Length: 230
Image (tube, rainbow, N blue to C red; front, side, top):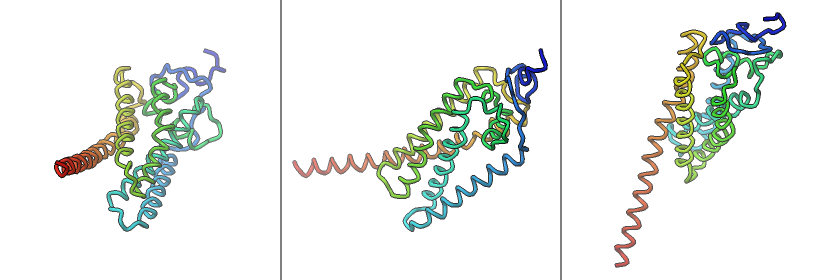
């Protein structure tokens, strides 16, 4: 192997070690900086959404928390995952771009991102383009009490659960061998994705109950009208 082929074999922190990444440029930002910026940004989004939702006295605390979730997850889909989907050579970035640094770091937990695995790119691309805007629409729908709010939240949550299932299942079928070590496997691959399993599941159950109750009330009303006309 010639010295000019930097990043082809082994000159990266990812697994498997024979992963080919021609032109790989190591990250510039530390792990603590990357996670710190993400944490502060997320806290800012949640805090502003919480304050904004408080302007409507009729909103329950649960609705306000849901608005915070949809704002957070919507911006995550649009900005972070959108950048990944449309930046195929982020691992070559030499400018210390924060979004590129995020994915260089996260790839330690799942190197399929650096390798541009077709399944991962497809899932992330659809998530960014469809679920990102839809999540922000859910914030608006909840704040305005729109009748489609529960159906929208149910649909997005099912999409998130489906995407997460595909993400984990494809990794398992391919040998689940994409983490640099066990720390990154559990911290990034497992823990970082856990929210998109637990929270969408709870929202789906709640929305299912709300939609079912509304349909039942409507059906009872129609039955009453039929009985009156007899």
